[in-house]
Structures are given as C-alpha cells and as structure tokens.
Length: 274
Image 1 (tube, one colour):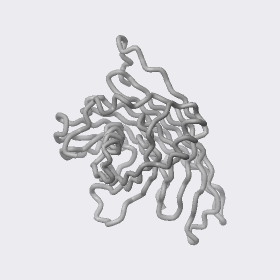
Image 2 (cartoon, one colour):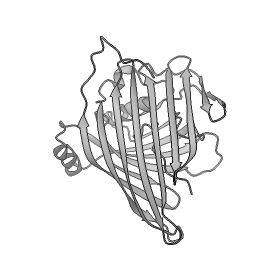
Image 3 (tube, one colour):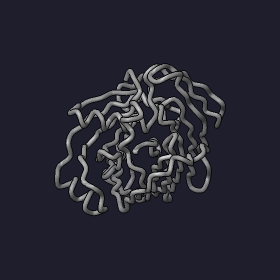
C-alpha cells in the first residue's frame, strides 16, 4: 500500500509549456482541508482515516511558491494507529524553466522520506533535467514538453475554458522518487449547485468550476494502471474545492474548511527565491 502524499500542486501536474499569461489568472490563497476516509476495500483492514491539510499558494512575482502540510491518522482493525505527516514546499518560475522543491515525510515520529532538489528546462517546451540533492544526488533527464505543477494547473484550466474534455501531459513535481508522471486528465463542468455552495460558503467571487479527474502514471513504469488517481473541483482562479484521492486499497475525501484569498505582492520589490 502506498502512503498518500499530496502532489504540489495538487492541487494541488504538451508539446509546449503553458505561457505565463495562462497562469496570470491564478489567485494566491490559503486553504485548509479536512481529510476523511471515503471508502476502503474489504481486505485492507482499514476502518477509519482522519486528517488535515493546509495549503498555501503565493505569488512571488518571478515565480509561484507552494507550501503544503498534512497530518493523517489511519486506524486498522488490528494493530496500533498509524500517523503520517508530510510537508512540501516548492518554487516555480513563471517562465516554466526552473523549479525547486523540498519534501519530508514522518511516520509515527520517524522520518521516512527526505527529498529536495531542483529541475530546469532548456527553454519553453524543450528538454531539461532534474536532480534529487536528497537523498542520493540522482539525476533525471526530462523529456521535451515536461511541465512543472503550476504550469500544469494553468493549462488544465485553459483547456477547460475551451471545452477540452481530455488532456495528457508529463509533469515533474519532486514529491516522490517516481517522478516524472504521465498525467491523464478528464474534464467536465461541475454542477451549478456545487459551484454556488463553494463560492457562497467562502465568500469567493463568481467563477466557472470544473470537475477534473487525474490519473498519475510513473513515466518509467511498465504497469498499465495508474499509481493513483485524484478528482479535484477546480475554479478558474486555480482554487480547489472538494478533492478525492484514490489509492489501491482506500480512498480519501478532502473537504475545504477554510479558503482565504491572499493579497497580490508589490512586484517592484520581488520576493527572493529560497
């Protein structure tokens, strides 16, 4: 069983990278999601899952900064409760050419994963490379057309606005050693009632809302099926509503309990990259 991780973007993964104008409509915001067990297979032994995810998406003038922190408790019918926590931070250049990331996972008080590194593309849509400084300095070649997470979200939304219903891209986010991923997306308009409830509850401006079903396939895997799948209600401004994460043995439901818009920065004084 794979322990769930939240891909950066993921909230928040072409032949050409999304232009910076495609991401210009994304709104900086903070969101908190309550995590709960949606379903589990009969053989998993899982009887309950509870957790919390905090997500921050900020405009750093020259790039987009993401911070995500989560805690999840899994209770099985036999054995003690399993508690996992993970944190993810990233910085992505608005021109789509450079990316930095850091990921840590702790399970029952013990650090089990510590990833950090950087990636770059030679030019928009051209090939590039990535290096995991931690844990072992491994290097990866990134094929032409590989995208970073915010680019991917922006292109998904741009495709949805034109009525596109299916899209496939290769995405690198650094959140696992299985990167990069081939991400297949199915897009459909979400119901008006769902849209109105999300906007009204958090006092957000009106915006189109789409249901996006994403399947993640490790690019180097020979398995026919995805490693995991995820459904997200995405607004035009990049704010995510309900999220469903599907793994082999169970499914998690993430419901927003807080969404707050952040002010745009004064880009006469850009925020320095970390």
